[in-house]
Length: 252
Image (tube, rainbow, N blue to C red; front, side):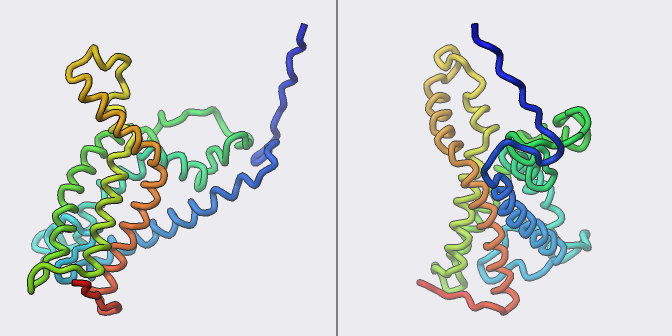
């Protein structure tokens, strides 16, 4: 008769039987999310250098009351809640920043120490993470504004053209779209909740959509980081051109 294996007790905070450098994966998350958060906050409050020629920064789209007729602060503050809420409640980002900034948990099989009873996301403010699906709907509204912005970036006063900024904004909206379409909630809405596609309306169509979205969802982490970097660089490029720190190069 086999003897039951002994239960290994892990000690205080950071204790683990892992022999790898588990903390290394937290470093890029802290650097990228921390840097982006500081830069995005600065730009959201700056309220200038957000447009040049046909280019409009994604941080300021849709551009609301730029002449300050009724809103005296930065126009970006009027649209900040949507993109922020979508990313902050994203399933992947939650895992990333819970570990990197809250050390909750620091990593798989790494002790959190003597913390209180686990409550998950049942208390304020973390219970607001359940709004992620609603932020997903709102994300599509923002895409509906950003795609025309990217198209207008190819139309200069002298007609159609291609500038470096045109390509920067195009790459950005493509990555933002891939990030949105690869969302776990969207995959679930398409068919993740069904056990039998043939038993529901539009079953074959929904199964096709679910399989396609599942393929995108496999790379959700990649799209999350690429789109975060691209939206920051797109705003930075527009800011530098608008402020006269950089000259936009016309390729066509």
